[in-house]
Length: 95
Image (cartoon, rainbow, N blue to C red; front, side, top):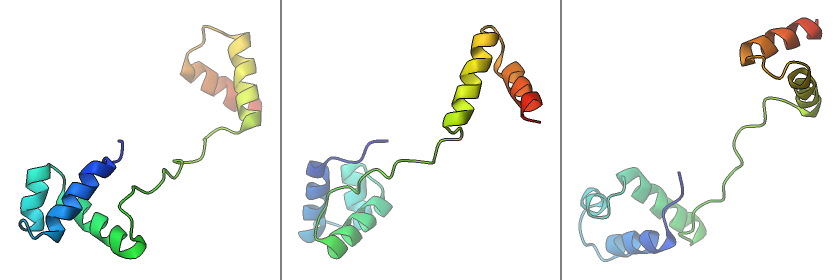
C-alpha cells in the first residue's frame, strides 16, 4: 500500500490545528483512520515533518545466491517439473 500524499497529510494536520472537529470526525471527512491521524501528529511532534517514513525494504529473501543457483540448475534439468517436485528434488540432493 502506498503512503498517503503529502497534500492530504497537510490538509489533515491543518484541520486538526484549526480545531475543525474531533479526530474521529476529521478522519471520517478525509476518509482516513483515526490511528493514521494520531501517528501523523506524533511524527510531526517528533520530527517536525509530515512526510511518510521511507520504505524499510521488507523481509529478507528466503533463498540465498547459492540456493538460487541450485534451483536454476534443477529447473534446467527438469523444465516441466512442478514446484513440489522441485522442492522434493532439492531436499533429496541437500542430504
